[in-house]
Image 1: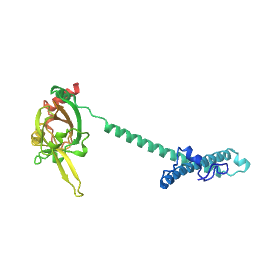
Image 2: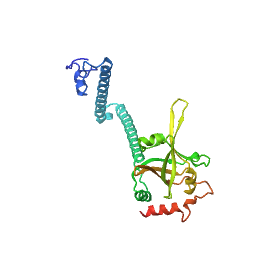
Image 3: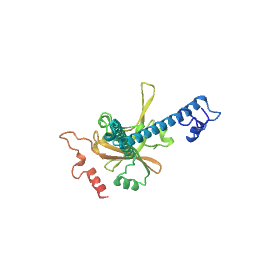
Image 4: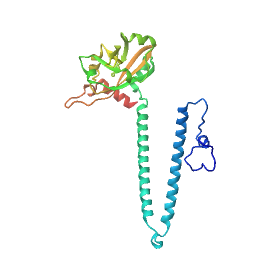
Length: 281
């Protein structure tokens, strides 16, 4: 490190003025490593600025040479070809930077869209208001898996690491490890009883993964509402007099197998009727 003077300007030495220009202050209580990191960072910034300055000087010099009548004065046209090559290269770099910015903006839009809060269908809002419910929360949006759809399992699983927000109080966190009796609004708006449990699965690395699971009456609810594998489902929580309730919303049908039809979408069925009401609202 050298004191700034006229002889150091434009040289590769780092001065205290360089540190001040980059708002870097080195104090006595800093370790040697931290000091070295700061000095290296400022040196890198200074080097980049000097490179940029040299490029600008070179471009201006080439422009002045290209403006001369080369053929008449006997000047070589190599400078002009070099300038055209460098200009094309810089244009390609700018296009690459623009493409990266476009991808970044597109990614931000996707994240924003993903994080936007979905609206609870109007028919469910009316049902919850009628039940004097409050504190609505979207817990998860997922496709019904093969295991969820299988009759032999009789359960609907919600991986804990996919739950969007906390919905249990302190007593419920203890109770759910055994069983928690809750009410659930079905897609057809009937209210039924359901058992909610927390299942913990040990991993080979010694860690544990957990899921919240609807059990006991899941098979009857699934058949009654015509739920199938790959259907997109939302699970909402709400409270009635501080008691935990849930609402199960069918967002969209999954890919129907060839030759099969979903019974719940036949004319006059309860779900198609409620969806018509949502369209009117």
